[in-house]
Image: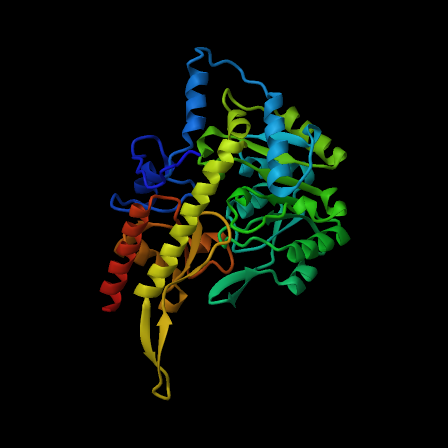
Length: 410
């Protein structure tokens, strides 16, 4: 069994890397540690990059076709990990999941249609709804305490009201930025409401392979809902190869599949470049599963590190009205059940969102995602990317600690 080194630091500066090379341009500052955009600083699996090198060494970078091995790898991966039995006739290609969502909205909705989302949620959902000329319907998630942590939950009473009249829903499964892995009971409730109201579902499942709990593909929850769902999936987040531009979509309803496939084909949207089919073909394998298992262990350890660091360094003594001594943790986190993203909760600091962003950027010198961009409920939060070597993560957390101690004189 190969042993992978996730402590290895890779210099990404000067490589046309959005995370590192675009940070000074986006924030207008040169001294920020980038912990924002959702790719990892871990080396992409070497057995995959070796295959890319071998392919390039072939000497001719001509047009690429979609090989049978690509379909076979996806089919085997879904069956092994999620017990989801699909066949090649149900699978298609898109160069990215947001691209796929944009096309799905244009294929299955028309301007003016209502599309429901669960904010705070991955902000390109709202962007693409607007670009498609549709009307965004928000069903805000509810934040509740759960065994000493915070977790997001769906307000089903609110959903039952707001889903009426909607043409489509974009589901983030697992959720981003909260990291919730939706339970079977929750998914069944969503599915029933969608079936009863004839709502088409676009399920973004890009983070599912990075789940620490059993992931349930939305299309497997209900036979009826499977008939009205398109699922997007990709190796990009899982194996840190987003730059290759490779994603797959699955629709088990033949009519739905053929309609979307024809739409993509008609616009020449369904083709990949020379290496587009290699990530899924190579990474959805025993070697890929082995690498992923070790990556998940490292990410879980990073999550535990952040959780302990926040508790140990941002907890202050308090005194209630009766003079009783207690304690309050001023910076908390939503413990993710999937992926390498943590939604940090700064609300107890009592800052406006503008003040919070200035504190994180100007005082802690960190480039994090502003929680407000994820929509209603994101105010008071910032999203932290922990898909990095522990040394980088420690540096980021110590910068936050230093800024906190300086500002609050603790």
